[in-house]
Length: 269
Image 1 (tube, one colour):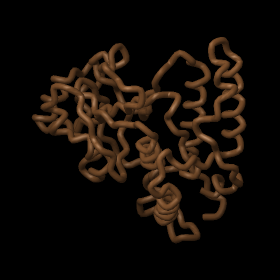
Image 2: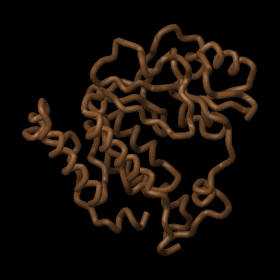
Image 3: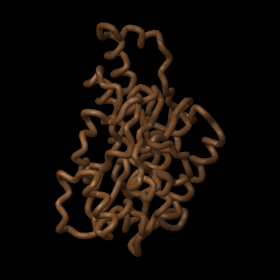
């Protein structure tokens, strides 16, 4: 409906990403993960598994348990392998959207003894640890539910030198849960009407536009950002440039130039 608002998920992700770059200048990587996931008890933050090439994007396998009785905190790799074997856990969303995490190859992970590379495929949306200085910004045209993370991973895979590497010792896990209200407003029976039909049709059209814009580009075409995000990005870049030992940033071209855009492009999402 006209004036309908959807959660600005990618705008908030950009805010978090910019703050990570500004407030933690010594950090080399960022962990891009949803808040409802629990990290395995495998020392991920102490040793994500070396060696890591400068542009490696580390895929952290994602699982979901089928019962709320399973305690998520403190699970080891052996615990997860046992849960998978018993049918008490499965790859995240494999039951209704297998393409989202399919390239991770959960069967291979269960038997793996070392990290392994995988190729990007359309609709792949893993949770990743990525180099903070080269991870793209999120496209803020995508609001609410649908394709918002998929398009970001697509751009991430286009960064020159990027290589997707699945970590064999670590993972994240969440409980299987009902579809969210945001999902229902996009794909469910109460899907919001819009000029293209329903919200589902809008998401599909926006994704098609994104794919057309990107083509075969590498590096990725810069994302569409709101003016507010562009201003914050410029402000934080100046702050970094003024810090001791980071003055080189003042002379560098931004890694990800942003296009000027009408604010309404995002508000009408």
